[in-house]
Image 1 (cartoon, rainbow, N blue to C red):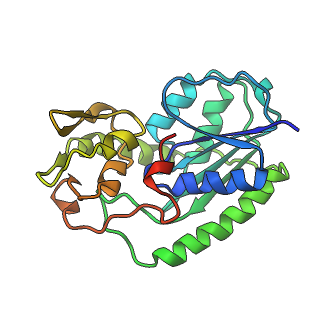
Image 2 (tube, rainbow, N blue to C red):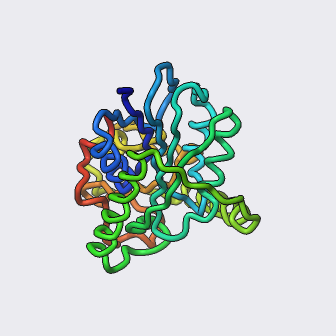
Length: 254
């Protein structure tokens, strides 16, 4: 049997948990981070893309990575996607489908999984976390089984409203990235540097330096910092932090 390949992008672990759920059901599956240069040279039974929805679309960092990915339709007979989101996925799946179509790849399956919203820069952690995680687990159990069976799910058309919402959201992300600040509570542990999926953080003279132009606004640095030393403006000061309870920091970057 051919092995399976799952590409993953995750800031607080929601999407990594989803990728792990799929991998557990498929069996022979490798999870690869959407980070740096990558190419697919072998043949796989299934190839998947698991990532969160940002502003109702594909995160720019993910979209850029996919467009640079060296892959063709011969890499697999089945391509799937799972999108995690705290709200509506809006035009995320159609956007991914169109990006893959540029590589002559058809997206055979795509589902949105609603889980805990984690964009702490805009809102505090909402109540009902255990219930939302349980619901996401139940949904992922169905998704994983459908992917195992190579089920087909049609992806709808891109709507103008979703496109405009996404464009506005990305402009907001650009502005908000400049608000990331490191306080004196920082101990220079380097965890934020290790977890940043876009390599936008580096330690310099014992302090994290954030490159705002490449920041994806995944909030990994804010949410995972053990000292809560990184904030996105005054609004996040004192807000409860979140990362998926089944995912540990050492799981986040392989």
